[in-house]
Amino acid sequence: MTHVARTVAFKPGERNIFFHILTACNLACRHCYINPAQHGSDTLPLETIQRWLELFVAPGKTGNVIFLGGEPTLHPDLAAVVAHAKMLGFGVTVDSNGYLFHDFLHRTDPELLDYLSFSLDGPDPEVNDPLRGSGVFATCVANIKKAVALGFRTSLIYTVSSRNLLHLERMVPLLVELGVKKFFIQVIGLRGRSAGPATGDHVLQVSRDRWLAVVPEVAARAAAQGIQVTYPKVFLDQDEIFQCAGRVAENYFIFPNGRVYQCPLCEDYPINAYRIDNDELVKNEGLREDRLFTLDIPEGCVMNKLLQPDTIDYDAEGRPSHRISCCLLKQEIG
Ligand code: SF4
Ligand code: SF4
Image 1 (cartoon, protein in one colour):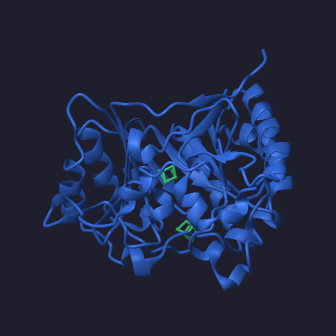
Image 2 (image 1 turned 180 degrees about the horizontal axis):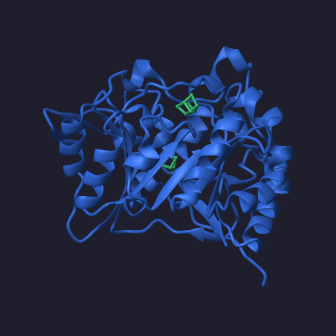
């Protein structure tokens, strides 16, 4: 059977809530986008998380919540948080770096989670550990095996950079061996640590040609092995329409300091469209991200043009050679 990638259209009537319940982490990955100066450094108490989750319940809409950090399993009450989210009717995913603190696997019923997601940035310690930390590969793989054995549906996130692009293909046999059901290929962005002097200017970024030469083919190969693969669209074809998720979808990126963004590219700036104030979701006034979403430009995504203009090529007439899609637009295969 031939597997063909399809673009996953933004779905009206669906809410995705990306809930950073803390920003603390035991690792210091090279491309980490967590920015405590902008996102806070608190660990939200269980009762606060429960009240904030309730703000996003919308009868008649499908709701998915993804718990993130930092490392969310550092939260001592994550198992109770998951149970509460499920009780509210959300589909629930936890994105972990693989360390699974506080005996998370044994304190959580696998049926409560849609997916327990792990992050690896290489198919072996030689590729992964320089990016994510010494010993991380072995710990993460051991815990994926435990999770699968206990009946958790597992997914894996691989963030592509210039350091690991050519090793992506070797992930396919590893995913098959581990029994991972879903594979998310991400692209490195110019946020957080990857934008800083520690890594040098843009050194981790991948060009359009290299991305297109590798990622779709590896995705198809994984799909042929029965794995569902999702990767960002990034570059729109000539006949595809541009849509900004901030205008046509409902995504909320919540941080412990109460900031609520609609666009992940805006997260390093105090331009969040919403905030949670006294346990109420409040719309912010003034020049905020939602004003930027309304700008129509030939390059596609406004925030990409503002933050990563070097990702856009122009022809001799000064027209962009390709448009950049919304970073939330995905391709799916499998
Ligand atoms: S595991 Fe996640 S939060 Fe922790 S340092 Fe790595 S990217 Fe950042
Ligand atoms: S990434 Fe670009 S297109 Fe997507 S929500 Fe943000 S500004 Fe809009």
